[in-house]
Length: 269
Image (cartoon, rainbow, N blue to C red):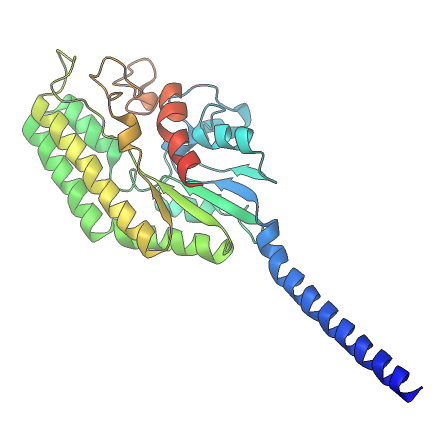
């Protein structure tokens, strides 16, 4: 009898211990298991400016159903999808206005950011409307900003994302080169200006990739997928100057979102 009671007691203790360990493991695993939501942050390259199909409720943010975040969510059915990317966004706008949906259940975050901080729109306006000398000078000013100020601003964004969504894989998408050199264009910018703009895109991407890596994030390089589809290629996935809708100038069209950005996110996410 004593042996039976002892055996029963030991068995009960072992079962209780096993249950406790199993319960602890489940409790520890549950946040990771639940982290399957997707949040898409960033600027116009993530919101889909230039692709058309804008969601009416997104207003001036111009979020598109043809943008890579929307296409990825439609194909992968995450447990939740929040699309907060906005046209014109800078790093400060992401921190102030876009991080609300992030949380323990966020498993994937994507974003493109930094181009507006570096003065992308002003660079292109200068290059289109002024001399080659003025274009090169404005690009050099932007590159100096990328060296001196942008890394700290990216750090602020990346740290804020990690703090709010610690379980998330974060994919930082870069920017394409704009021009195929010695391509089909017979007017517009000089080859020197086109080459300098391409080099500036490389310079910006290198800075973004470095900061992303230092935070343990994945950098999604879209330059290879856009190769052969730059402006002046004859099969461009980027708008050139669009005088009817100037805001779409130098942004990916629908093919650029589905063929240039989406495959990169699919490959790494």
